[in-house]
Length: 378
Ligand code: SF4
Image (cartoon, rainbow, N blue to C red; front, side, top):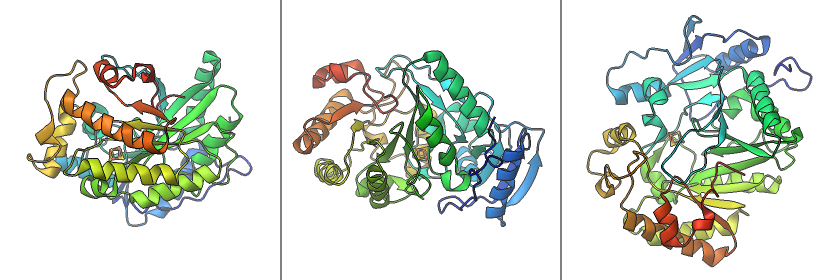
């Protein structure tokens, strides 16, 4: 098996990430199991000389104690903590029911992310709530081997999604993993990569041979909404600039507008933003989605924004089959109808998907044939 730092031409010098300045680094079980993983860990530690390093080789990556009782304190302590370890079951098939989304393959060479979105749904999921640290899994070659075997069994082009349990690119300057992943997918007969991010650092990607087998998706909102609900994150202008660079390099590029937040004047804000975006970037697909969070994620949102905030005030609690909290049906349909109209004005034929929505919403919008057309798949 190839070793990231041993194979010819694959050595990589980590670069710091502006959005991530850990004050503690934990070395957890398996971190030194391969020469490549150990070298990468040591090189990453070298990027952060200010960070205190703890050797916890006897502990799994999700067993690091942060010493915080309050969930918000633990959340922010986690965002300043880097855990280096291995993930033995990093390639999985999702298992969700009661909404229209098809299940799909996803993989994790990172866990969670350094950005600070006030609405973050991931922060409330059990895995992150109890282990809110930022994680780099050093067994990238093992993860690639697992993808290869799963795709070989499927024997048809299949998407493997990086971005379900992490930001797919935020830590790439540190790891250089895209330099290993993109060429792997490029030469694979069946495996395809779909990656979701808010990062604007695509320097590692531009020169790679991707063969059209890696699709890059950006999570976006109008700048006014991003400014209000996303902290410590690249600006929308920077993200759109990264999309343009990747599109010019030939990558298939998509956008995910999610969560759409109906702030005051949302109709005009979203119309203007979508027009600008569609004129600037040759998107292959756009996916729309609204708030669809579990209660523990909403508790964190309310700790960050206060109980009276424009998200909480419009939610309808306890009504959905899948346990997620959403805006009322009529508001959701009104929002989608407006945004879809704005998209159709500029790109009438563009594929439009709805993320984690209920069947009755597709029916009301006359979009039944779009069920299953979403960002997580091909
Ligand atoms: S980028 Fe995604 S995972 Fe990271 S804080 Fe924002 S919503 Fe959460």
